[in-house]
Amino acid sequence: MELGLRGAAMAVTGASEGMGRATAEWLAKDGARVAVLARTKDAVEKAAEALRALGSPDAIGISVDVADTASVEAAFAEIGRRWGELNALVNTVGPGITGTIDELSDEQWRASLEVGTLSAVRCVRAALPLLRKAEWARIVNVSAHSTKRQAPTLIAYTAAKSAVTSLSKNLAKTLAPENILVNTVSPGTFLTGGVRRWLEGMAEERGIDPTNLADLNRIIAEDYGEPCDLGRAGLPEEIGVVIAFLASKANSYMTGADVNVDGGSDFV
Ligand SMILES: NC(=O)c1ccc[n+]([C@@H]2O[C@H](COP(=O)([O-])OP(=O)(O)OC[C@H]3O[C@@H](n4cnc5c(N)ncnc54)[C@H](OP(=O)(O)O)[C@@H]3O)[C@@H](O)[C@H]2O)c1
Image (tube, rainbow, N blue to C red; front, top):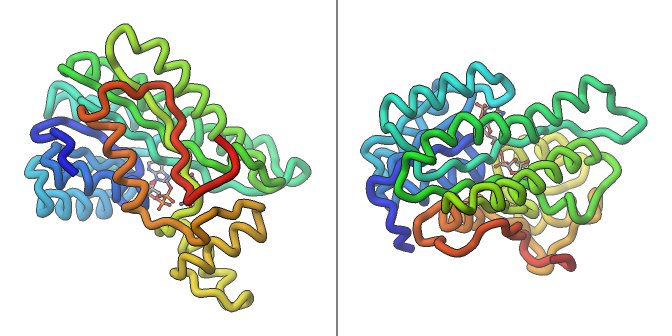
């Protein structure tokens, strides 16, 4: 797919692996300059090296903790020094905290909101001056389709993700006069590094293969009540391509949308 991104400057959080990495790969293949943002220095540098080989000669890796305001400000200051502008910000980082209303402490709630919601707020705030300097600009925030189904142990996760969806909708309206387009993507179940590591723990006791997309979908359907019509989990590149389109110049008329990428579900 040609996205018209040659030379565009784009930052993707959580891009060292999973759907952030898959998104960054689609952007790199189209010739964008991509900043890979995640905490582990070695991983961001390796990812940037891989993106350079794919067609993004200026790809850079920046170590950042999106739960820390000073760290986020320093990361976008570095992007500003290098590129002076930004065409797109993609926020993919999310929290991994599970537990029911009876189990979760205030501290765990705060952590979920820090990584799940405030991370996107502070990245948008830090990126906006650079987005405003670019000829065209897009923001894509990753939420979750579990916000529309709900599961008892995902209460803090879905609260944080619902706030991200709301934030996107508000930003779409606020920034429309400046022609900055803002959208949300709500993933179903994807075989990413984080999900595979989480499943590996239960693989043996349940007799599942943590890399089998149908097994993965079955576990999510049984434990979280989230089946999908295609009967299998998705691959990171299958959502990366949707995020890359929304982050691109080729998307010129979608803003304020919340796009389900979930293999088919019974809600809008
Ligand atoms: N996979 C699914 O089935 C699924 C379903 C619905 C929604 N989602 C959402 O989709 C998004 C991406 O999920 P994924 O499964 O692709 O993730 P993943 O494979 O677990 O990758 C997470 C990425 O985020 C980075 N990261 C984590 N905490 C960070 C922090 N505090 N600061 C900066 N970077 C951080 C990680 O690198 P470091 O650890 O080095 O920082 C890594 O690059 C998340 O928001 C998730 O909630 C996923």
